[in-house]
Image 1 (cartoon, rainbow, N blue to C red):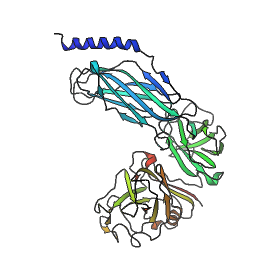
Image 2 (cartoon, helix red, strand yellow):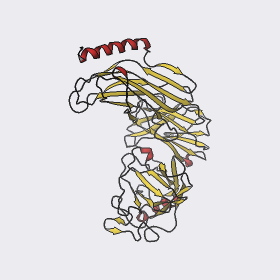
Image 3 (cartoon, one colour):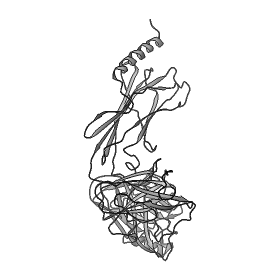
Image 4 (cartoon, rainbow, N blue to C red):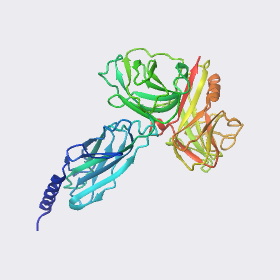
Amino acid sequence: MRNRRSSLLLRVLLLATLLALVAVPLATPVSAASSTITRINNTRLDIPDNPGPGGGTWVESTIRTGPLPTGATVLSVGYEVTIFSPEPFFNLAVELVSQDGKKVLPLTNWQPGWFGMWTCSGVEPFLPWWPGQFDDLRADQTWRLRIRDKGDFLDCEGYLVNWKLTVTYDFLARRSFSGQVFNGLPGDTSEPMEGVRVELYGAQQEGSPNFPGTFLRGANTDEEGGFVFHTDDEYAFYNMYVYVPGESYTLAGSIAGNGGTVRGLGWIQYANPPYGDLGGNQFFIAGGVPPITSPYTFAFNPPVYDGVQDTYIDGWEEQGTNFGGKSLAIRTGGARAALLQYDLTGIPDTATVEKATLRLYIQSRSNSGPMQIVAYPVQRAWVAGEANWLMASAGEAWGTPGLDAPADRTEFALGMGNVPLTGYIKVDVTDLVQQWIADPDANLGMYLSGIGASCEVLVGSSEAGSLDWRPALTVEWTE
């Protein structure tokens, strides 16, 4: 009888013979139709054995998915991975990672085959109208497949046989904006800047007084300083804005492409551009220059932000606190309602608020019935980590359970916004913020409830994993 090692050797030799008949060069398009393109990597990758406890060393293989035809929009990325593992059960950790590292997809649905072969396949959808997903996951990028032996078993050497990615795309009617950010004076493209915040806004009127307008998309630049945005929103003008936090940088200038007009340091305006690729925008940043002052302030919710507290209260869990979760629940009738409070002390009390918008990202809806979010000024101090249906803080109860008027909030709302099926809720809170600017002591936050058909919506909280899913208050003001 042959021993186990010689049996495995025979299987490996047989497998190598079969693979030699179907070998395809690295990252060569295997098929290309009107809506899909496939890339395959047939280069063998050995997986080191890890006989001890704990995870072993990651090994990686790469595939570049692009380039795609001009104007193409990615709908999904399908994957199929084949691995040889001699053990009768699969003991490897396998992950598919996007170029920027923000998308990590663990591959777990492994199916056994002949001669120690294991296969995993699936499809990951791209939803380009959801900010924070497609904008950071560009169509033309290098994906990494990483593998390691999880350990605890002997003689677990294996190897990656091959893997492929299939990109499904279409030519959708949407505007596309793209460009790059560089460190240096205008024209110096030698040093691309990664991690710079770029944002797209829509406005109905031209020029600086209307900058930036309504927030549409936002993302950080990739390792090549690049960004890509797609939108179906209709505005008369679109503003592309580059934001660099901190005092050590300021924008040195920008160069417009494909019809954009430079309106100031760090922003370009388009006059109702046609559909299609609007690439060619370049922004240049010079270090060591004092920050430029502006008559406008934009209060976003950055990754680490101490100027906001939020939670929600639940009439069915009266004593439960919901602080620190990734979602805020809002229900028609007020059975569940959210509390938010922003620190606006950076805006002078002499400022005139031109526009203030609260943006909430919809994580889920209970149904598609018509619903609006209404915002009421809160009239009692509260603590997010202690507030619930009964208590404003650990030492003080609400005047009426669930924050009723007039003891805990005003009788009339000072802001309202429609709830779409997906995407963002935009609540106009201009009057509310102006009231707080004029009287800072009155800023005890806002109470958000729902009106309309019986419906509940979950929106991202300040703890949501993606920056673009967190509540964001945008304030435009002048003195």
